[in-house]
Each structure stands twice: as C-alpha cells, then as structure tokens.
Length: 368
Image (tube, rainbow, N blue to C red; front, side, top):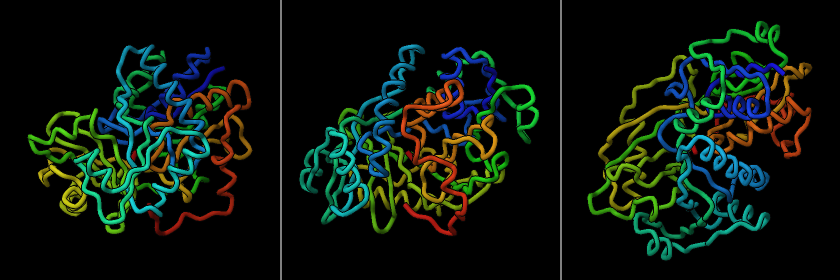
C-alpha cells in the first residue's frame, strides 16, 4: 500500500514510522524540516502521564503509548522518556484532582493523594495554598519532542522536507491513501473540522543555586489548577539552572502563518506570578522562551477518522494541546485503519461525526 503522510510533527512522524514498520510504502511530507520550531512538536520536553483527568477512556491508549515509546527508544538507541511521576494540584473539587482519582479507580492505577502539608513536606519546591490537595501519578514523566520526531523519521525511508501541500488531489492520484497530520495547518486541507489555533508561550525561569529539590528525581512534572491563572504546569530542571513553565490554554487565537513569535511581558507576567505564588526557589528571571500552537477542537478531544465519503483520507490531528504523549499509539491506530480497515482500540470519542452540526465556541477554558 502506498501512503502519503502530510505533516512531520509527532503524529505524522509516528504514523509514517508505524506504517513503514508494517511494510507499507510511505512518504512523509512537511513544509519545513522536522523537527522544527514552527508547529507544536518542539521545546525540549513534553509531559506523559497515566491518571488522565481529561477522561478515563484515554488511559488504555496511554498504557500502550508507554510501551511504544520504550520500543522506539530500543530501536533508535535514544533516550526519549525520563520517568519523574506527575502531580495534579488543586482544590479537592478541581477537575485535575477529581478526574485523576476517577481514572485511577477505573483502571487500578498507582497514585497517592497528598494533603497540602504532605505536598509541602515531600516536595519543598511547591507552595500549597489553603485547601490544596495533590494526586501523585507514579507512571508519568518527560518526553523529548525533538528527539522523538528525529527517531521516528529515521525509521522512514522517504521524508520530503520543504513541501507545502495546497490540496490533496495530486497525492490521491499517486497514492492509495493520504494521512493528514498537519497540526495547525489542518484547516487548509480539512476545512470540515471546526478548530481554532491557539498561541502558547513557555518560559524557562531561573532557579536558586541551592534549589536542589527541582532535580528530576525529586520533582515530578506538575499540573496545577488555579482560580487566578487557570491551568499551569511545569517541569523539573533539565539544565540545573532553570525550570520550564507554561499555561494550558488561555492563549490568543491565531493562524499558523501569522503567529506572533515575539514574547513580551504580557505573556511572561502570568508565568512570573505563578512562580512567585506556587513555586519555592524560582525567580522571575527569564532565561529563554518559545511559542508553539494548539489545534483545538470544541471539546478538546482528538480527531482520528476518515474524511466523510472518502476512506482514502484519514485525519489524525486537532490534538488540543495534550496530544504529544499519544503519538506512537495514534500512529499505530492509523496503521490499523489503513492496513486492516479497523482497529481494536476504542477511538469512539474521536469520531469526526460529532462535529456534524457543531460550531467553534467564541471562548474557551482550561501542554503537555
């Protein structure tokens, strides 16, 4: 089977890798040269976790994703996954705390529930607020986005860089199927999915020299739900001098070819405030920044489905800011659908038909 994959970010790279492994004739196209900084698959680190508060239905996919990440490490000889655990912090009634416990109960996951005092004692880098609790998800950690994309594409014999696809017609003439994994550029090719592109900013803030509690073996990745700043998240130090922090959603809507790449105080002040209120030993000094993009569906769940009326076009995109960790399993599902016509995995939540009469909302709430 000849398959063209449009997009060389994590979803496209993973799909091309899994198809090639099964013997398909695959070519992967990207408008830039992946891994690159123009889309959503960059920035040194991505969170992978198991007690998925967004929905317990994601957990079986995550369990398989971990296995495939380890397979990719073994075949590539690259270290891509560092286990740190993850903390979900917030009020006892917050979505992160409640949802993580529900996912753990349904799937028998290994978690601890910590009071604010226990959080402060065990993880002195955190400053709990009154009423805070935390869920420790032991099977969680950090992925290397650039390393992952590089390792996946190295398993693909035909990667064509610098190719911008204006439409799919030429590809469909020459290939049996086309997979669209174009991230924020998806609307150019698949206009029937109602998505909005959201600009996101990350910052690396300096840590105190004596703040040894931010080492990866002592400081889990975290997601904290706050009233003032919404959902914020962060990583242990990977360079011994800074920690990476960001806000989950609440960015400005944009289009991928005109995104504002310059980062200013409007972007940074909420991150500095988060560090001052919730982290011990982190200053407001910014060592570096980056911008990336979320491709958001109205319900923030993925799209894994064929185009209406055309089973030659498979869409795997619109990851809504939490898709990177799923890359290998989504790629494997895509290979199932194209090569076998079905998949044993439950992808019912990702059907495109749910948007048949929907409209993109004017507002939103809630990177890993």
